[in-house]
Image (cartoon, rainbow, N blue to C red; front, side, top):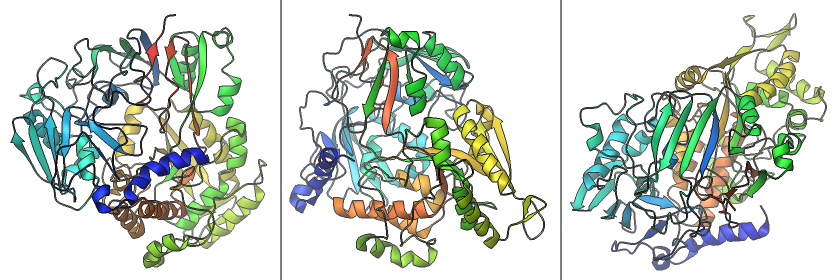
Amino acid sequence: MPPEILQKVRGLLALAICPVAVFFAAIPAHGESVHGIALYGEPALPEGFSHLPYANPDAPKGGSVVFGNAGSFDSLNPFIAKGRVPWQMSFWGYESLMGRSWDEPFSLYGLIAESIETPEDRAWVEFTLRPEARFSDGSPVTVEDVIWSFETLGSEGHPRYLAFASKIESIEPTGPRSLRITFNEDNRELAMIAGLRPILQKAQWEGKSFSEGLIENIPIGTGPYVVSDYDIGRSVTFRRNPDYWAADLPLVRGAANFDELRIEFFGDDAVLFEAFKAGEISAVREFNAEKWETQYTFPAIQNGDIVKSEIPHRKPSGMTGFAMNTRRPPFDDWRVREAMLLAFNFEFINDTMTGGAQWRITSYFSGSELAMRHGPADDEVRALLEPFADTLLPDALDAYDLPVGDGTARNRGNLRRATRLLAQAGWTVENGRLVDANGQPFTFTVLLRQADQTMARVLDIYTQALEKLGITVRIDQVDDAQYTEREASLDFDMIPFRRALSLSPGNEQRFYWGSDVADSPGTRNLPGIESPAVDAMIDRILSVKTPESFETSVRALDRVLTTGRYIIPIWNYEVGRIAHVKQMEYSNNIPIYGDGPYFMPDFWWWNNN
């Protein structure tokens, strides 16, 4: 991370080093109502701020843009587990009590709520609703709607909402426009998570099943866009609500500028790209650096009708690659997982796929100050992890690096090392096949979406290396419905994996890696990680009160996850790449989190000049 960027991010976190009286300056000990809240210290924007730093408050309204999704959909309720939903749904039409500034590690400002109140220990949080807050049908947002939303999402909603619901001791009205949520555990982040839960309309669901997922039951929200039309499996159209209640709020001033947003669905990414070249789509995000350089040269780009924009960011790499299911053999043995890493010839694959233009993810938080440091664990991290030394895998406290190939297609050195590890795990070669002590062959299945051509190409190269070890790989490339069902039921040996991680990791880490959810249907802990050290580091992240302790705790978590050999990492997306029609524009002030569904299309606009 460049020094000037690191200085800015650390500066925001460093507010928490101040004495206790200053540390809670934004949240007075007696619980006075305030306009915003930060995980550490004070939010950067003062009360009465005019707009977010990366917004253009004078952005023109208008224009119709088209986006492309690979795959299909059969539901328009993004808050339940049933059905396939356009991923953009929850971003465009729905809001929460508070909203984020994506130019800060973790700060929230009032949205549906005009103020927030919480004591020094954050044992409870109280929100006061704005009297002008409205659903898209014009009805007011009430305390009853908010309480119903928390209770319904926590009992009938998607599994991602269930864990938070279990941490609520009580939720009750405290006035005509206010409510208080009391928590049953010491967890500083819960007050902020409560502020980010979507708020839905209770009256809409009287006499209806919220969890059934009928296509016509589109949840009513408070956001700037509403679904105006849809063709099941083919397209969804959103129109900007001309009576959107929050258009002049500082948090959203300069946002939601397009009159119409439409999503067209295509069989796979290749067909989608051809549609973009033909002018049927307004913008695409490109994740392959080589393709960006070599295939974005068609006439519309050459004549300036299409613009290539690169959006920098300052967030961790997150983890992208292939997750191994440790709940079942053979991937319950770390030696086998290390052998899989050795056989994955990243240098050759990266050169083939991206021209070597994208660097490899080296840990879950790589590219940031939160990442595990090269070499042995430093004294602070070692002190946190040594109590769990008997549960850690080899090299967790010592130096550990991902295997590096020799750059050739054969990768002989790493394959020899993989063979030795497999032999230690009880696998030997007989008649060209790798078998266990009972003569059972080493075979496994990779679950893959039908539309995912990029990962299919990566697997083509990878399986050739595994064949040299005597391993047989079956690739189940299935449609979206089957993929979603099998992923939720954990019916796979290996699966493509992506977890975006932030500069403020918190409770979501439990959902990603926690032991409690490892075997739950629909879990986001796809590898099935069950590690006392991981659980303890997550608990510590949620309880520390200084940025130094926070960073040390995250680096320790990163070290345990990385040395656990759960994921085969691929390349990092170090910059956002968006190709778009020239009429789509954005501010030069880029948030520290760069591009994402919170940036494009939210803070872009249409310019006909």
